Length: 287
Image 1 (spheres, rainbow, N blue to C red):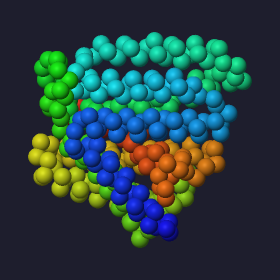
Image 2: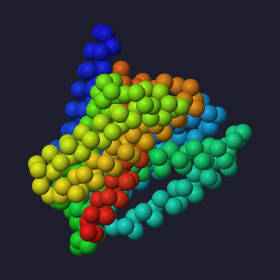
Image 3: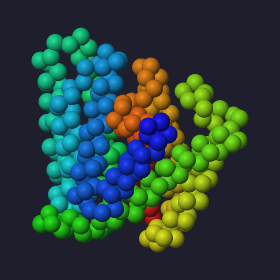
Image 4: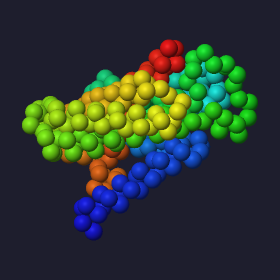
């Protein structure tokens, strides 16, 4: 099987799984995206060993899973905001456990462990809030029966997020190959160009405006803001991921996806874009 065929089949399978997790059912979303989160976090910690860090793997994965789970339950109104207090003792345990490990760089280990959670787990956990009612002024009645978890579930914002992210990547590549002459950030990514960047942003805006006609619950203003935020911060996330990989001299973050690299390679645009989109959603809920 040649590399193109391998990339194509992996890409089709990857997108199919992702879309299934977004569209069909909240529980399926939880299973798929919790798995992606933990795989990405594990991949990040494996890369950390190339930087002389020895992350607290098991404890950090436990914290990551806990944050993702309670974010999902909170967004679905199964539990209230007080549940987040659980996270504090887990972070305390992270530092205590390091005390009993005989490693040469304990501060580096703790810092790398915590940064992995902030960089990977938080952005994925925010997806749950894309799927449920985000109006801060809505009532705070929490569900009693977890079987009601489908109430208020709306996949359209999260689906739009990924469609815009993919649209930006695709058209940035097309415009870059066709017209690219001015390097965007040559030190980090020699192939990216300003022409590709603006082409990606433009076509993402067009895509978002089209989506706003199908998903009538959000306005043209929101569509444009969403497209610009996803494009700009998705590109920055891509550059930061490239910076990480260059610093440890690796081409791909992993080998989980044949022809595409690892989880971090496929989701690098998510890590900065997700928190800013979360902010935009709440900003528009106040307007």
